[in-house]
Length: 325
Ligand SMILES: CCCCC/C=C\CCC/C=C/CC(=O)SCCNC(=O)CCNC(=O)[C@H](O)C(C)(C)COP(=O)(O)OP(=O)(O)OC[C@H]1O[C@@H](n2cnc3c(N)ncnc32)[C@H](O)[C@@H]1OP(=O)(O)O
Image (tube, rainbow, N blue to C red; front, side):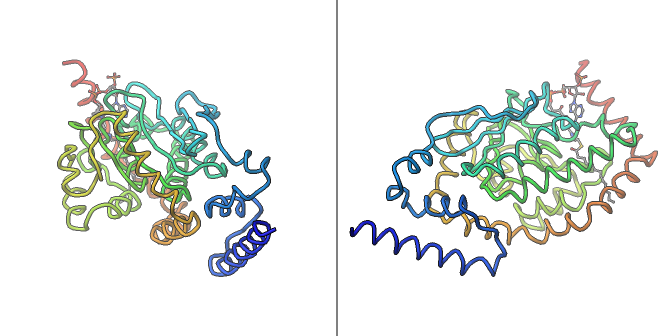
């Protein structure tokens, strides 16, 4: 009798607290939200055994991301998903890889069991080489539009994800690769690699939202110096300025450290955590939502400039020449 009464009182309290929060943040709450909340408040033990069992995850699950370019696994026990970029040799972000990432992030957003996400790479030496330069060099009009729009959507989905995110940076991470990691809330990097927004070195300009992502991690002065010079940082230098948060000895250690970081959120109210993150990121997210079209038009006209095409051509030649040596 007493446990039943306690359960009823707890439940009423929960519902009341949820409804007090709702008008402020205009959150839609349904039964599943309630179950998540209840689970977090550790009352699942008081629910019907069958429901409690259904809420208890069991094993590691490979989820369908419908793309070999992106592997998605879910640890059913912890609710931590791992998204692995798998586009050899360097995970350069072409349209298809971006589409795979978008699908994975959106799928996790809809997955009530997702408690956090680790973003990493299947390459032994490269996290991501950034945007695939071939998407911007002599671009086809329709494809380049879709390419940029998908990149914007990936940024919105990752930077604005409601679940906590960590980048396990197990290799070099220039430009767009660095951007992906900056969208995550925490960065753990393996030694002796490089990371940074090096766009000016290619004769191109990092868009405003690339810059605001960097400003979320390092102080303005450091960002100004890094962005204008297109500086790439070693793992140790990146740690010193706060571009990364931790160094891991290898990929397995980076994953273990990522899981440890994410596990702290088991004790934090998920709605409070999510709203705090989204409030902090609100102005950058809102800017993008309201300026997608403008940003696309700037990009299209920018990459269409002969001088930009020339810079990209030279940069590609440099990469090929390096390969030939
Ligand atoms: C006023 C407002 C203006 C607004 C403007 C709007 C938009 C413009 C800005 C657009 C933003 C762009 C951001 C980007 O991400 S640009 C891409 C920048 N990326 C890089 O600079 C990285 C280049 N790559 C490397 O440095 C190295 O490849 C590496 C990642 C360190 C790995 O080195 P390694 O393992 O030695 O591999 P290789 O160098 O031999 O490369 C293997 C293979 O891959 C090709 N490749 C490498 N990177 C890219 C890439 N980003 N895109 C396409 N292809 C790439 C390389 O050419 C080799 O190919 P081959 O095997 O065919 O020779």
